[in-house]
Length: 191
Image 1 (cartoon, helix red, strand yellow):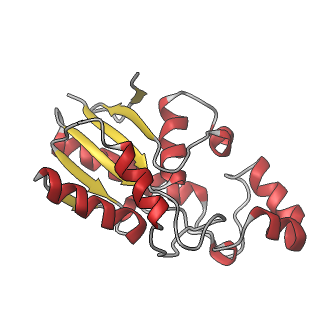
Image 2: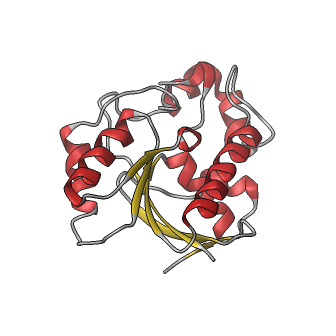
């Protein structure tokens, strides 16, 4: 039996764009408004799962309380750690390390930024977390409040895209996607 995962990316954060990674900045008022608007359609979930980083967790806590739905924090659904690139924008990296940024964009699995989490390790922890959710909550509908990188990874798999296309998958702030995961770990995007 499959578990249905409705994925939602956090809203805009106080420190703005760039590679947020494990930086724990808060949502702006705009970010809160984006998320509240994104779930205002009356959808219901059996439980909420959230990254522990506050840009996800604070909204998940609010939503769980409003809908009286159980909430669980899943550390393995936090964003990719970008090492020395954390907090930097692509424009900044183009000025300071354009060649390395180009390598990362063209081959994210083959090039790891300095002191960053390798994409293979990120992929392993995210997929392990999804498999645990499938085993625990098969047959349920979960709202997963998480990060752009996590959602890109899961959509790349669900859409059957080559791994190298990961960074080409567009995921806007507060955007929702629905995927299912079966007992074999097969991911499928739902309409």
